Length: 325
Image 1: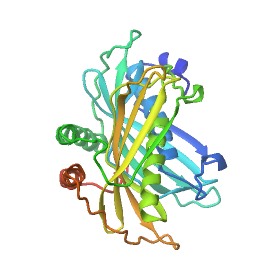
Image 2 (image 1 turned 180 degrees about the horizontal axis):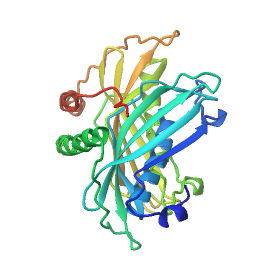
Image 3 (image 1 turned 135 degrees about the vertical axis):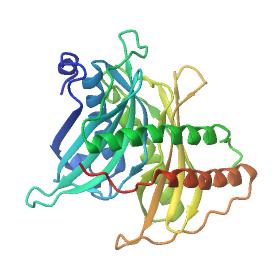
Image 4 (image 1 turned 120 degrees about the vertical axis):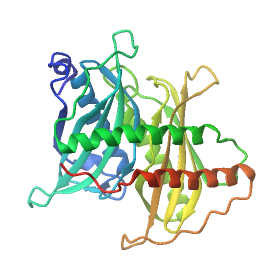
């Protein structure tokens, strides 16, 4: 669906959008399958289409969260990305996005991931604007509507815990920083950098840290929540800073911050943050333990405690498997 079609659709009349396509060779990562970063790009595009169709306005991504990456997508698979509006606030919309895939030669469909996205509708002046109210009509929608309201409270608790953390250079952890210019090909429908591309950059930086620490293959299995604080513009210098904050068994928890700004100036502003869990895999793709990260410096110890606190908070979400229609 093109933006021009969305703008002329019946506002509040279309609550779901489905994208269907074949996973192409150019979508694959260096391991030969479609990784979490590319899947998140697809999710953001479908979520945007659903939010814009319902609201009748350009919508910006505010949050993408509780992402369990259950299965990878293989090149050549038929992919379906369905986004459904499940809750609206005054100017915000919450969308559940489900990714499924299957080999076109077979009839076995698998669910790759399901997550919640929050969008804010914007008027022509770039300010939040009211959206039509959403009323659930079946059991699935009613359950997701109630869950969306519950998750709002959990997000506030997570954000309060995040606000008091310090991320500085006073660290001994495994850390990587990527720097580059936001290119014209990264643009979205509103003229800013596409949120899906930002998530892909975050996943790339996080994977680099995880695989450097493990000295082997690591796969993203969970993302605790992408928070988008401000837009990023074409031509900005982008800094993606990823650091290991916690290990447990085969898991590596990596915190990633994205900052950007005018390359003619020295100050960069925070645009996005996320914590991702990567799982170490052996040659047979089975989980294997990683060497433990044992922090010594105060900041590193504080971030380790922060990681365990987040695990406790998110344990109350009560769902790790997709909610089938």
